[in-house]
Image (cartoon, rainbow over all chains, first blue to last red; front, side):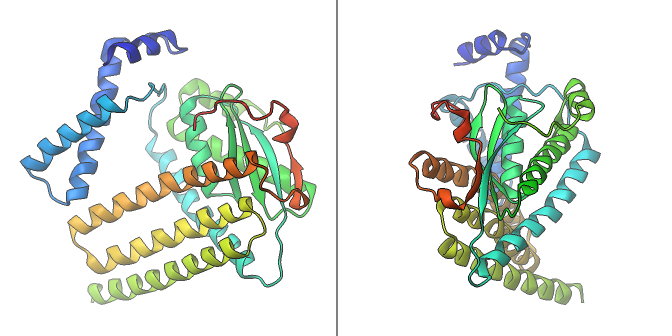
Length: 201
Length: 120
């Protein structure tokens, strides 16, 4: 079962991390699945541990996922910054949408914009897409994986400048995510590259 | 003392979460097209659920319940955007959107006809 994914891993852009890296990823995933299983039962004992290992192993065997290239490392301080800003902006965005939902006779206008991310790795694409959907008044419609482009629907636009603001915000979210989990090279791309405003394809 | 405060803060969180859920429901009902409705189904809805969970956690205060609450919160945060994206994409591809309400559409300018196989 592990033969073909590790071959795909080696064939990908990632230089061969070998069988060991693949096994380590699987072990980490299994560990998390066991933790989830334990939380679901709300109790830690040997039966739950064994059951978690069994179910987690079955999940990993029957639903194999392509390897994600996690080249960076987790930075706790950046994670805290990200979580804090995320919470604040989630509250702000929620109140905004709730307000225009109950405002009588208001029809919000919208727009669909393309945002080209500066770090087009799968992990960054997925995390940014998730975060951008929740936080800054935008919603993911389509993902172009090859060029690393997200297509966002922006709610409640009034003037063309609002689209640039939404683009900026999505790129700021990306930068915070890369600061949290990105590698050094990815971090340099995000920090040095000037925020390109004209990202139209 | 602390228990009383936690109970009251928890009660406040429950009411706030319920109100946000109500606003999300009104938004889903009132917004003009599918894409706007997905906004209501993600942001206020997710925050409402998180507040409800926080209120529940503050009132139950037992480790087993906290684990379950944490799990629900994580899965809510992880799945709500994905569900909204799938519905939004389906709505866009099947043309169920009000172009009169769109200021710009850079997805249409891409011109490939939406045939890409993105990571769903």
